[in-house]
Length: 233
Image 1: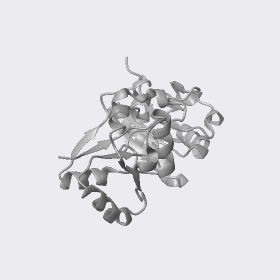
Image 2: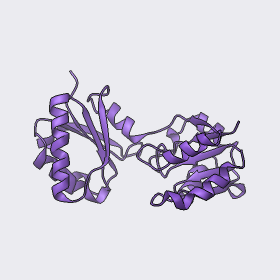
Image 3: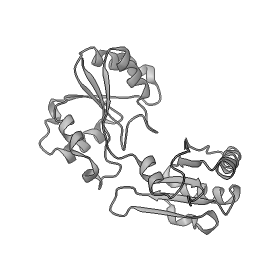
Image 4: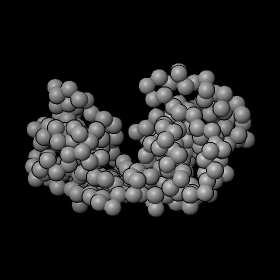
């Protein structure tokens, strides 16, 4: 029975040393890949396995905006009944990244699904935050429009204050400053905010402080994980 391997990639280009041996040992046996972006996937493979025969491999890109556009190609690849690897641009596929429907399709085709161990920015950030790791919610990207963003942050504030649930979300780096200012406007200033910046990079920074103590300008243009909640005692 063939397998679909969910392959975690480096979160940052400096982070290839965070990829465990099991990933390298699995990848070296594969020649078929479903990827978010071929160029990124090839670069990752070259970083972790300099002698890997990339030019002998087949790469099929997911269309993240139109799954149906990829459906026939994915089905055709899976019908080869060979082991396949799936990679996103960074971190673990299917977690805040496209690919869940491919897993469902592969299972329908009789594939065994094998998720490999590797870096995931959401889990790394939460683990280092000092906040509730037993009960948390991941919201993905918050709304861009200011009124909708304010409403969502007020809902997050209620969940963090009353339920003690850690609230995790992400943002496009160039909107970090705007987001942090909106957090300070709509969320209780005594709640804590953890910002995990440039995870696994050489300049990684994970800081947790009260919302009122953050300076928004410090985060501009850096990839970040945001976590709002209460520190555990």
